Image 1 (cartoon, helix red, strand yellow):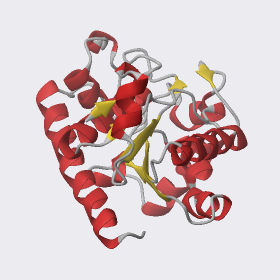
Image 2 (cartoon, one colour):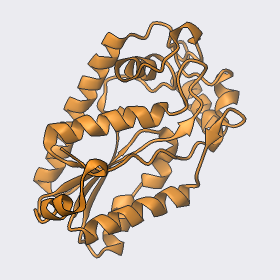
Image 3 (tube, one colour):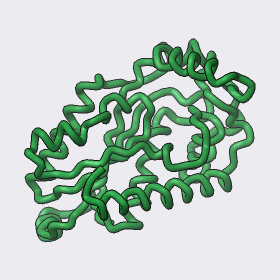
Length: 240
């Protein structure tokens, strides 16, 4: 792995002469995660996932884009940018990477609200750069055998595995969907996209109270294993 923010210009210019250089761009968010997790949770988790993927496969790791689209969490705390802003940043970064001879890029997303911004971004960037680059947008939670949550069991376990900044004594149950029908879950999901507090009341989707570091490491390893396989498949096929 090459963590580019710690490197020096002469070394980087020498390394990028390799036509097989592959870059990873992690994308997170700054938003409320209940009373027990820091507002940096999405960025923290995706940074760790991207780091481990890069270490495992020898990729170039870029600094995390820590801001995302989180307007739906208001009036709870969030620092948000527009969908068009995030999309423009990613396009500019990919353009800059190509100019530095890096033409294969994985965008690793860590926040559900960013999905619209990265949707079809590979097609847009290829068109802009006239097929000089291969871009693969991926969201890490698609690579674990767990249901979605927000500050619930999964995210809290992951944070316990990677961070000391977790206040488990303040953890409380949030929206529990176990007894809901599929239609009810879809309906509440649509509401949460508009107003997360209206859907969850306390800003938590799931139950974090039984989260453990052990579970977090297990989930993280599962994500890294599955995501790494997907990355290698894309590289082998040379397409999405």
